[in-house]
Image (cartoon, rainbow, N blue to C red; front, side, top):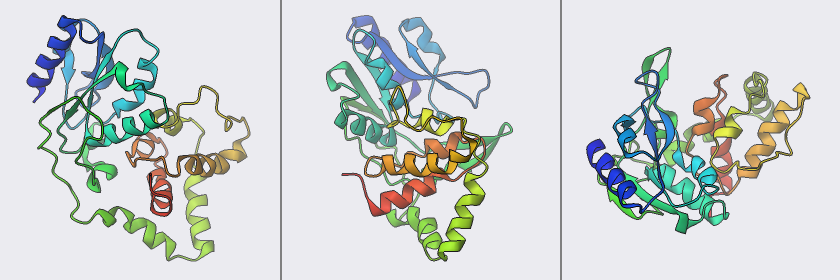
Length: 251
């Protein structure tokens, strides 16, 4: 599939149909590919697509809108849902994007250079469609990893069965580890404000930060799991978001 993706990207670039390609490019290590804007067709040889391509490229389409010309982007189903939400919120102009949906078998966690199984968001993924796209490559290759879509709420239900004091203790234990690095906010597709009202130097406001940010995502979060993936403290932010998805599913 990678060669087909490269060939299609090269054709679109060389014809002038698009000004740039947004894809994953080989990084310093094989298991750490990075998002990249590619304007030179010869650079497409560095483009990769495998189970280490964990970044949700829809996030970068917000900045792409500030560049002249059309941007071609490769999107998996979860990425496409995020882009559809950004389009609803007028953060991405559809006429400035050429979207190729690509098949996805899920991404793996990497810790200390070792594979640690599928990402949590991939283990319970229920998305196999592309709400926005211009063409598809390998789209039939989207095996779902859960037979029951409600399985992703299993941890939410278990936590709901705890007492209020137990739930409070659970979140205090996790959120107290926050170092306010803002990685979760910076990676989230639907966190795109240039200035954030939650910016603060007060270390005691980290609990408020996560709760308020989660409420800002209510009805908007697409459950891509990027927030939990990049958290250096291992805080289960996706669990917090899934609680709100359960109570206020995206429209």
